[in-house]
Length: 320
Image 1 (cartoon, rainbow, N blue to C red):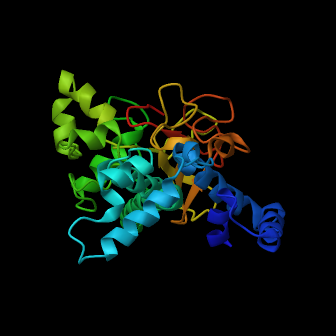
Image 2: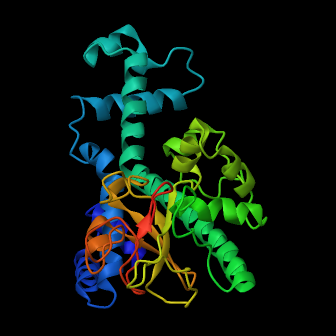
């Protein structure tokens, strides 16, 4: 069915195929995921939509092209008759070089229309798989840490180091993540384009407290991902982040913007979310606030949750 989505986006399906795709998109079980794939395809092919219209060829192009092919086949003729000055004049005076350009342009345009959308989709899917693989890798590091400590990496209740991004130096210090292998980066973000991103160790972070370097480290130490801020109990104390293997409780996601409404890591409002049980989901902008806002607690604040089930993802520098 996903193969048919490409044809559906390009209006290239026959009537039975068209009805089958539309029924699948409306299906309550299969439909939501297919509609997300369809929207991704639609946005990916938008850049070539201007080339989908009918192109009117220059007058006499077919006749001149046929004449050109015949002339090339007649190798024994020293001067192909189709391109003598008399022939050129009889066909509107078009020189051979001009005909070549027309043919090449038409071929290139056809290739863009037919192959361009598929190529864009393949590039987008490749980048998506890379992001998912990175999150799965981080999930393994978090799982290993939880098995050793019985909790996930947790920031202290208060102080300079009480930040969401502290999870990254913690995992690097325990050699569960490599500081500069790009695992915590997404394609084409500001951090990934710097080419020198590196997660500090806990010792390096503590040594920088009180210096301008510390503020720089706080902004970037978590990479392009935000981490759970945990929750506070009724007395306001920040609790350790428990590993309860919950299927729909986020622990990491694309880092939010400064306004805490969404992330700008990926085009089209796409967000990648890692859950406690280790699986990764792709969510669009409307989905991150549908039931429980990904970046705000139940009180509407970008802060620690107000109960154990209130999941909030904070950017690297965010204090719970």
